Picture 1 (cartoon, rainbow over the protein chains, first blue to last red):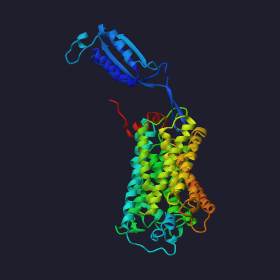
Picture 2 (cartoon, chains in turn yellow, green; picture 1 turned 180 degrees about the horizontal axis):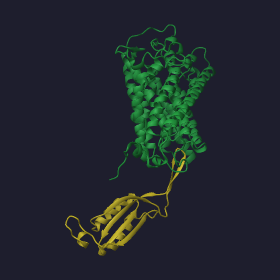
Picture 3 (cartoon, one colour; picture 1 turned 120 degrees about the vertical axis):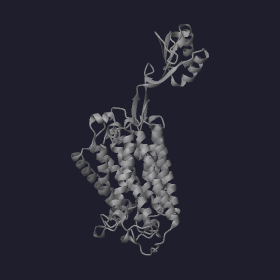
Picture 4 (cartoon, chains in turn brown, green; picture 1 turned 180 degrees about the vertical axis):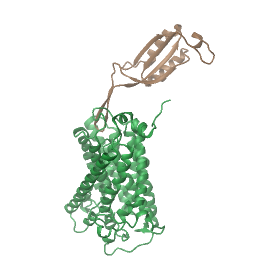
Length: 112
Length: 437
């Protein structure tokens, strides 16, 4: 099992969620986050005072998947979140040691 | 308000208020006028609405999220405190006959309004209504000053300062201009408070900002508004409420109130657009904060002129307000690096000064105004306006400085550095404006 952590542009969230649902992913956790990468920040101007905004708003999606659909899930996210412009985000994949469904106590891929 | 009564509404009896200033030939109309009463009742509501919640939201959105409640609290508490001391004596010090001292301060006969009945009249409206209407002006004036010391003043010090400032600064200056004092005798024209409210609050703001000092990190650290929709909501309420402020100051429901409403609206629109276009040209984008700040500048500037000028004068005053207040804001904050945190002096102070001077110009019938008093030239009137402005600046600056120093030496003006970093909401009020989970 793998945990996919995808940092994407906020307005791409709906597209990614729909695409993941279509390939059978049944659960996603979403967080509003801020950060910077190559896109860096931007400036804001209030009554002539310029402020550098270093951290841009992004959405972090956490998706636990079985090894079988990992590649399909990754390509789905890449396709759905891609705008071709700087700041589209990143995807991190980590190994997931255990998953437990709290209600039933099921473990492993049965709990996904 | 005596001047507007004398010049604009020669039919309003003012003897109960301004015995010294009766013009010959005024009808002794001590009968209640229900139309006027209804309009001033309405205006009273509108002007209170400017502070609660208009100005409160405007200011609250402009500060950082850790101080949002402190600003709302300051505006709310000022409303309550001013109301009580207004009843206790401030109304009396302004509008009761001061006898031999009438030129400088009113008397004590109306303290606690012991003789007030439902049939007491001020002009042709109930004195209860006049009392309430004037009170709402006294409430918003110290509330405006909050913008200068936001995010760092102790709540206790703020309460003391607002109370003492109302008694020792607002009361005498308001009496000089509207209570039949020496500036009224000189013939100053301040229809709805360009001098009494905006110059006064603006100067006090500047002095307070200088005495209390900069916020930690100013100007290097970014302190952008934490909630712009709240700012715009408050600004919209201010615009609407300002009709009560200016058109209500006619104290009548007739053409002069209508004209005051018209010029107020044109001043606001012209000020807003002017500020917006300056930013657009200078910085490349028309900003939301820019257009609403221009609105406040336009409204503050048209305020003293609102019962005296015509639509063309209002257009000129609104445009001038946008230009002058924009550059004043840049100068105070970016060049002089004074932390008048929410720009009270450059917007209200400079706007009030500009508008009060231009009142003397655009009141002239040759410039579309409603006319200067007979035998008074534009230069004469501008001279009187300048004297009134200077007197207000000097009195307000000196007394405000003394009051602030006394408070600083006794109870302290400012929270500690740690408390300032933590934010006034949690430190002073043990509450937070926003919660996560």
